[in-house]
View 1 (cartoon, rainbow over the protein chains, first blue to last red):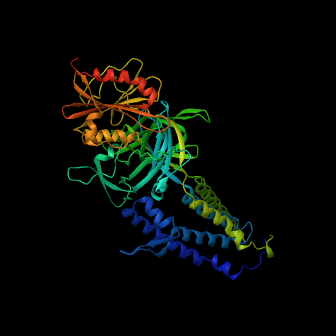
View 2 (view 1 turned 90 degrees about the horizontal axis):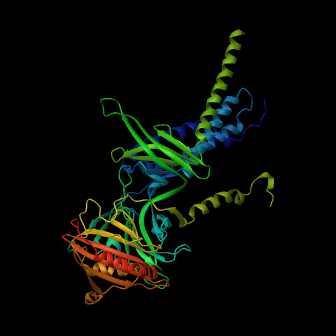
Length: 384
Length: 189
């Protein structure tokens, strides 16, 4: 057995079981709060507000600032991680305690995995119709302004401007853009209607937006509702010629255009796209029912995966609990529509996805080891 | 500087955290992506979509035609690239003639016209379905842009045929476009 000096008092306190119990109680309260918050906020926002934050903030009605009201999941998880590491620093290093070491190490990996997910995981989705090929996934909430040079008959040359830039900037200039984009307004959510006689003039002076009016409303966050984002954008040539103010919205299907230096440009506001270095073609979507009922038995998507980089060209069947993992992404069967001709795949990029599996393996191994040690001791004692 | 007493100086310990915070505050970049055009749903050439009863036309020799796509009833592509003709049908007068003309002028960076200037800008072509109002404008810039738009009112629907592109190829495609407008006809023909 390795001899170790007595740990300092604060280390002992930090690694104490009392702190573990306090953290576990706080985590239970957070899980309950997060579950209740999902009703009003939706899954993603509730997770961000309660679990993936260090402090839970609350803004009383009419106040201009928020108050810290409770430790968030990040803080409780961080303290628990420190608690585990402090405990490990003075835990006896011996074969007898190796199982306990492994269990603690498994928990440390589990917490590290959750921090990695919170920081690095990106979730999106890919709605894809039968016969359609897609090489991008779309964000659930984030938008982007696409300014596309559509002059090439075979390719679209797009400049993608993230929502965060539209919200901050009054003027967008970039080396890749041959004109300036003036951003007159950006709203996360709005009610869009056709302009009726007597309505004030539309703020748009070009494109289909001249016949539309909008009213900003509070953004929605619950899972089954979508925001109608609106942007008022004015392309201006370097010689100060304006192409008019365009009203762009993800609710307007077709892009709107103008001609700059003889090339057609298309503007659209759309869900943010995450382009992939490979493509999926939906060959068949199946929605099987139990005979004589409307109860779903199985949802599955038969897709053709084509990856020019790896040379892969194969069929893959994606169904419940059997996702496709490729290129650091995981594609889950998530939803469907259009009379079973449209499949929606949830796309998750999580560099830390293996950590929970490693954590479970370490913990299971540790428990087995410790059980073996205890069993051996019990057998020995019974013989003595 | 080596750490004293084996302890890491606070500044050094905080450096990675500072760098992470700095990286997270950075503005998201504008990204450039080149991707193959998405293929629209195919439709029969020389006709508007089945849901909209409208004019028929003869696609000029050497031109390609793509079917309905979003708001467009058809897209015609003259040879050589860079120029396209769009066909759009909308209910009513879509805000009036002046508003539409000024919308097109805005698309090529020209200032709006006053009501008085509208008649001067208008040419009239005869087709078998009635008069087609034709407007032609050339925009500024290093490469001049040409726009020619034909407007045909059929019942409660207004049909817009619009040719746009760089001046040289658009001017080359213009005669065939004018012939297309003059040759507009109905189902009976």
